[in-house]
Length: 93
Image 1 (cartoon, rainbow, N blue to C red):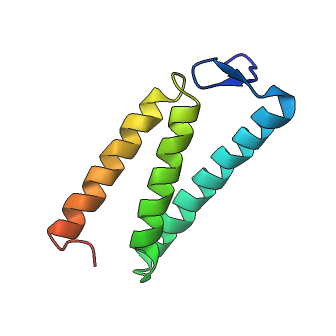
Image 2: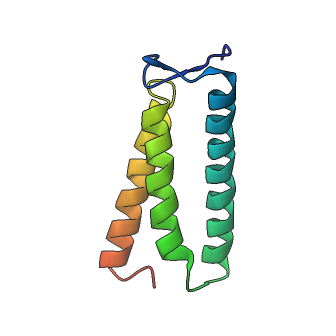
């Protein structure tokens, strides 16, 4: 992908510093998903609420980086649906 400094479908130019901050937020989201997966695998009590929060955070980042991140938005929707169904069916405790 070419270097860009715009967000929200190229309607807002955040400059070099702003786009670096967006990149750091993407890194934080990726690391948080990895930590949450570790919590799931170890059956930690905190993993489900953290998974919900990080999924919403990641979805918002996808909206900010639309349309390039549209696939991620749909993946986040899928994760949210799985979390809701799993919680409702009591698969996730």
